[in-house]
Length: 204
Length: 204
Image 1: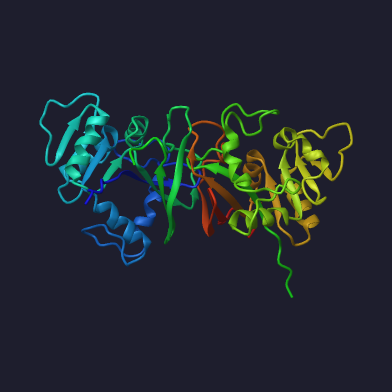
Image 2: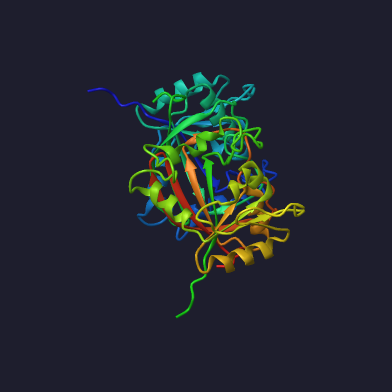
């Protein structure tokens, strides 16, 4: 039986006009000014205070569970720092590969490993995930991964709001068009989940 | 019986990363460099050479028919000029209201009327449409209409491609967030049709 390789896939909440944060995002404000609107779907209705899982059995909970079933995380340094490094454990103790220009002097804590090369980071994450999917974190990391032909899919949580300003999805993309293919579309409460395959640019 | 008022609604083809044209759009290149990718869904499969209607009975043909059933058009001057004024007839001889800063000296041709005030243009279009919906054309006109609280809905044709550059949907929006509500989601061949209601900002 052929082993099915896991997919490398960012999960990004995005406004209808293409923003993934409000303006002026920073270390103490990862989603920018009023950008928390983009994560409202995660707390729509009851949320388990420990797991942060959206309640119920709808599309939101299922998509959340899929994301938490990934076997490794690749993240940009900026996103990692803004999130306080998730205290060393993003979910379930899976390895977290942090793309960075320079590896910090102090040793990484928890399940974190710093990597300077995007291909190496993705290769290590695929290996560590052992057939499970790999979660990408951070827009710049996703762009670097896309440019390196290492992004298989994109999961967008399209939030019904126009932000008008902030950080854009895949800002700084090379000028070549990247063809996608819609794999699935699922309506959740207060959000539309779209999964695209990267055609040509990805490994799939 | 209460008369059901028509909705004012732009129909916009948009890339997954939020662009409605490629770069360098202009009079002889309304969709910008390589921006015609955004309209490929309109010619996916057979297209009637006279009506330009997408073939078949799928979502693409139905959405096209709905757009062509609108009873008036409100368009920005830039879009109007880029399109050569549709030779005075956008579709079926419905009135075309062109938002402009200055009304041209020469009389308007065909079914075209130049209007300098957005509220007046929309009011005239609603009246002329007689209960049918009103098609908005042009990103700036849609932004002006939105800012004036006159945009009821937005129909987006989300094309599975990342453009990375070009003209953005609703660029120059005021900094206030605009809440939307997803009314329907329909998968067509090579495109996803999303209809949103403008919550609060619109007239509906």
